[in-house]
Amino acid sequence: MHKVRKAKPSELRRLRAILEHQLGVSGIGEKVFPEGILLKISRNTGKIREILAPTGEIIATVLASTYTFNLRLPAAKVIHETIPPPKLRVVIANEIAEDLVMYGNSVFAKHILHVDEDLRAGSEALVVDENDNLLCVGRLILSPDEIIHFITGPAVKLRECVK
Image (tube, rainbow, N blue to C red; front, side, top):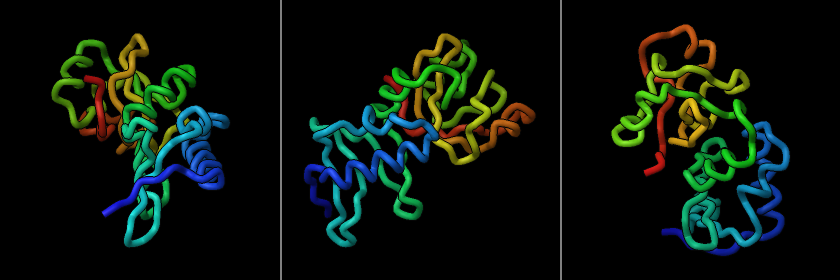
C-alpha cells in the first residue's frame, strides 16, 4: 500500500538534481517536476515510488535499486518541448512510426535512422519520427554504437507511446 502527499521543498530539489544528472541536462528538473507535484510513498520502506502531477497523472516512477527514473509520457512531452533535437532522441523511419505506436513494445535497430551519441545502454530516450514528432518513451537496450552497427534485434524497450 502507498500513501500520496505533496513533495517537500528538499525532496523537490533532490528529485530535480537526480533527473538533471540522469539526463545530463541542467535546468530540466524544474520543468519536469514543477511546484505542487505529488509523491507516492511506500508505506513499508518510506521511499518515493512515483512522482505524480497535481492531477494524479504519473510523471515518472523511481527505480528502487538505483534511485533513477523511468520516465512516463507526461515527462517525455515536457522534455521533447524543452530540449532541441538530437539530444535524448532516437529517430525512426516514418514508415514504421504508426505501427510502432499501435503495436510496438520495442524498436528494432534496423528501423533507427539516428540516435543521440551521448546516450548509453540503459538511458532513457525519446523515440521520434523523422519530423521530430514524439512517438514513445523508453529505455535503450543497446549503446548508440551497437545500434548503428547492428541490423537486427531490439534496440529500445518502449514504456509508453502517444495514442
